[in-house]
Image 1: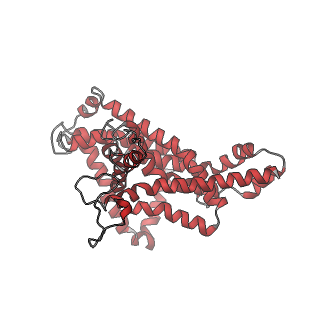
Image 2: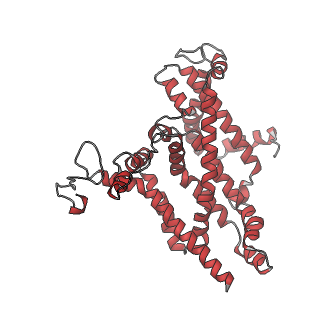
Image 3: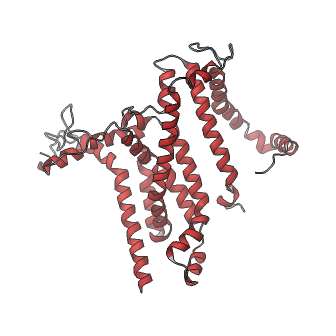
Length: 295
Length: 63
């Protein structure tokens, strides 16, 4: 990891503020401070407030954090992290062949069309699409109804932990796909052809040349999918029927039914710290300049 | 020859895979569209007595 030189960082900041471009971007900095940093500071402030109070920065206690691990909340963290890890693991083998198809097999026009087709459903609300799966899997729904026409019946899968996982896989597929496409596109075709000409098997070429070169894109996809799945709530509520309580459910309950904002804020802080630490670790292993073609 | 055949099979596999995943992505949206034709308060499939926008009946295959 690169060492951060505070003196040069301070110099760069001063230059940025003194430059014309920097001054023009001032409204964006203010917006970022108000819209992004301020809510995080408020959440951190609430997490240290006395339980069941509604005023931040007036009382300081770590009771919310200690109470968190006395109950069963840690199981919610385990479910969130476990489901997010499983979603990421399932999405890699789904998305890699798709990325290969989009980069190498389909022509440029067809590939562009497929990209648009993958982006288009994201214009429809996630909740609406998840309710579509309810209509598909429910009793006398589309799948069950079709099976009854064939003298059978559909499986009773709704409102199970497996269905929560299914919903996560469905919702976050595009977030894995596009970084993997970027990664696969970074692999020079000449290298693959050279390896094949030198007698390397198809699998060995993939394992020793293609996969390591596509890895930065795959890692970004994994990171994006993991972070978003760990913070997801709709899948567990709508298709999972809260059969398992993920940590976002606990945060939702703390802020709404329980009216215990400090407890909810403490949960949010711990989740943010876990995800933030993971992101920092992943970025320390990635060469972003190379991925973005700047070096 | 063997190599070309394997490449073609791999290309066919990823094409079929792309179509299957696209179907998976669009299936719930199609379910929403089919349900919108249902007249009853509670949805059941096949849709009975469905109406299209404008009050027209959909084709008899929905009955």
